[in-house]
Length: 140
Image 1 (cartoon, one colour):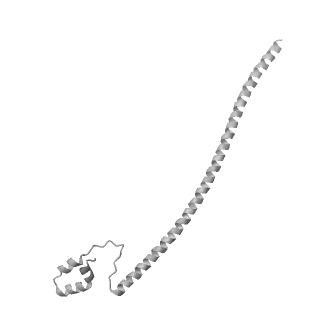
Image 2 (spheres, rainbow, N blue to C red):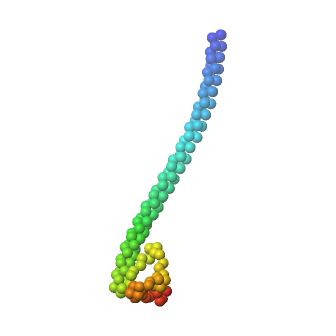
Image 3 (cartoon, rainbow, N blue to C red):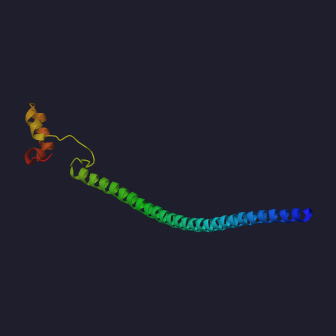
């Protein structure tokens, strides 16, 4: 009978262990389910990020293309501006007017004051002939 008691006690002990293992198995299954759900969410988030990245790359490519087009236009306009400036300079030289660059920061010259400061009559006459418009008209 002691043997039967020992078997019953061993059986009870094994039942408790099985119950404890079943609880651990249920906890593990719950964690696995939670991990699978989290993995699915992360995969969806990764897909959304990839799509967003593709959209951003497409926008960047479009912007770079537009930037290249605008740079080509700027280059063409700069070239055209240089050509026009050269033509104007040549035309001014033909009529005897000294061209002045609009981009340069030139000192303002008061031709009238300079004319009055000249004491040599020949130099004064030459200066007057050269800068008559500026002296009389007040243009610089």
